[in-house]
Image 1: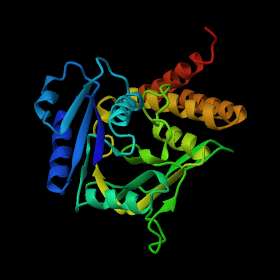
Image 2: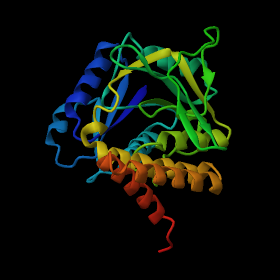
Image 3: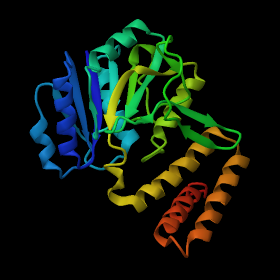
Image 4: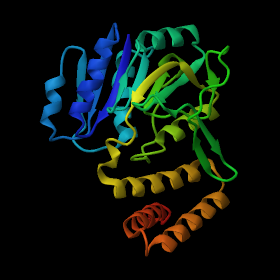
Length: 283
């Protein structure tokens, strides 16, 4: 049995396409969990079947906390399960679901597995992630894995757009950090469990398609604000205070310089910095 988890925020049409792609790609035995972050999105309930479960949150919890609701539900049912966290605007191609099940059965040492994520043009969008604590860089690569003789490569983090979790490797239900609302929670998730000795890997044997930012670009200014906040939060948790301070200053200066020319973008960046700085002020 494989469990899919997706977080809905007014994305019913995209999720319907995702479910159709599972059915068209020989999904086998599966349960599809929709964590509904949009309480008034009545259309999502039209998708409910015996294989499709809808978990109501009553509010917009963000991505990571939404995923936690799905993970907790699954862990309570089957703590040995394979969980595939998948974006609503992603979909499956070329019978990629059965190979994913077999892959984690063949390589049970892997705790968190990422897949190649391609754009509809088949250009690679994500093929691994790196975090450099000495300067705070968080890098998503888009180059193919260059060792075809090896079924997977170690990586520091993988995108939550397409992320498999082998629950057998976890003594307790794995959780995304609730401090995050949107962005970089996948990086933090992998870094935390990697530090505990879990294997984080990526394979080019499994691919999914994804339309980047088709949902989050609905409000580009809010997207920028969340991105800046979550980036600084990740540095707080995984880099030195000096690196964090350097990035705060650098982002702030860059925003101030561009303010006369790109006011909306610059203001969103400043809001992200200020929102982060608020968490540093004692209550």
